Figure 1 (cartoon, rainbow, N blue to C red):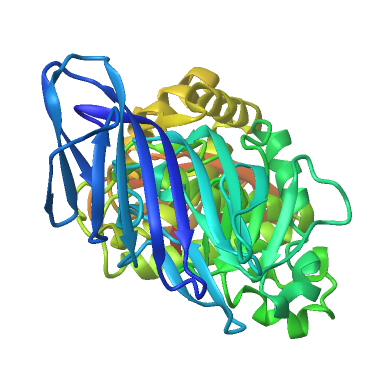
Figure 2 (cartoon, rainbow, N blue to C red):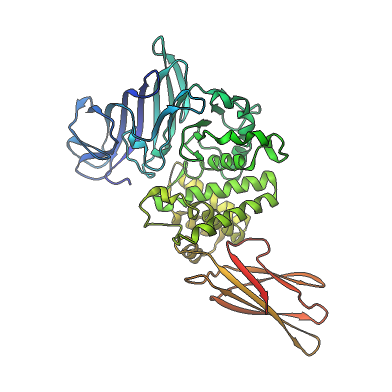
Length: 524
């Protein structure tokens, strides 16, 4: 993470060969600010591409290579706060991060795919989410190809009879893993209705006719998140079908979706739900667009805080489903999320805020996605819509274009709700598991006029009790009553009076599905 120095900007120049199998020439200028006194070396994360030269202020600089590092010797020990630039010139084929290979139609393509720390295989940098900076790309590619990258298009010019040079400028600081280019014989289009920001689709030729329909949720999603949280944070949004090992990768203003995203379209045209596309496409498009706010604009401070990216994107995709497809669709979405998490937890009992897992790919798990989404859902239900969304908006504004931690989120929600959330976060974020309730109930008569409904609620999960308030629904011949149980320990017993002509016939726990839980229920 950021320690002795930080990047303040990147200027990346790339020239590709005709077949897009190699970078024939690359030049990256990293603007640097020194953060501590007497720093004499800069350790750049960098992969195995051959280095042709390293310069500082136009003068050759000494450097050494080691696995994953390019260590640059400064001309002299530098004082704190001084700023300068290092230029690295290099070439070759990256081992990873920038995928050079055929697109789904078999045509040459190049696509950035960096998460979590693979961008240093083709851009020398500080490869950590806390090292955010603006980036400028200048890409020279064959004339047949279109080029897309982060930020706004600065211009296109002829570089030779067979090449064009494209310039993109992302003026907003973004995490290194979100810095990408895409080069291919794309079919480019835009939605029929204008979105809140310039919106473009870049897809293989075989997907051209379906792009507008497949990416149909994009415009409404941008509007929904802009209305709910804050205006869209970047200059444009490009949605790209290309090479990624994920279902989608949320690169700032240039999202890449997996090549097979639209393979479901054969049955989609007969669907009656919103946008006439399959649910899976809608979910992934909404999820990746939500990342533009959470993950890209507000980026997790450490990998242990990844749920602030993935849990938020998962939940906000669900909120988008709720807005456009209705409450039943949203509840089904959250139930699937719960089931996915329960299956994961059977083999992996670890906290959301996971400081032990070293393989970063292993953090892409239902703890950070589905359980993280449920944590937000529970906070929303316990704090109320007004305080919850007011707190999220304050959290976003405070950390826009920067980084945030789990404790930053807690502080914002506590201020908005005037509630102490320390115990909630301790149990749900820093602790493990979920409540497993055993509910039993029975009646006791008295004086012939009525009786008491006695409810015993046990928590059978390992570890400490979850103390979240939980609603019960009491069913009787006269209708339904709802009451609250306030657990104090893993075993709680409560009594509720009833009249003789209103004997309870059933008891249901958490009827609105506001808690992440498993329940067994039986009369005594």
